[in-house]
Image 1 (tube, helix red, strand yellow):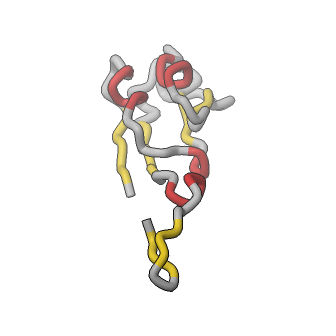
Image 2: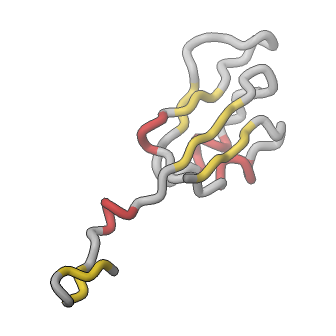
Length: 85
């Protein structure tokens, strides 16, 4: 809560939304889509290109991520790193 001329003022939730960043190791991704399914912000999509294993890997949509970490928790290949801030 911020104070304005001695009175508390609420900051709108949209201004307080957490920002996050994920890094997906596309060479490990097998396109299971678990991360896409679990992401509450729809910040992950499946790429149109192929990785070295012949899968369409997941890719990150930068402006939408909150850094909740659900994608990394669900990834069976441990291909996702989450950074908050």
